[in-house]
Image (cartoon, rainbow, N blue to C red; front, side):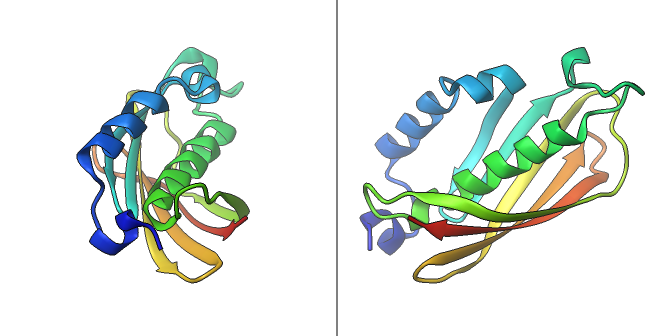
Length: 143
């Protein structure tokens, strides 16, 4: 078990390193995500609506929402991984609740159960008015 998991909070230098490296991930740059908050077992990531993220009817593309959710859940589990340990998504179920057209959305992901090998995470995506855009459940396996 890592020191992070034992203390239940990130060492500030590690947290700073994660925040700094987040923006350098090519896919994160492509989509335009921003890491807003990071705790052990929780992550919050923001995505500003842009024309490039719209589907043909002008709404936020479901794939952009799914990418936001998958990224937020991945960062939520970081504190439950030992140094050098990796994890991979094995399941992601999303319920799209309402369309999104303008402004930012924020995904908050939280671990609901962390076992020895599997991690279960829930996520909620809200618009700037606090209205729920989507919910999700995700499972990760340590590899």
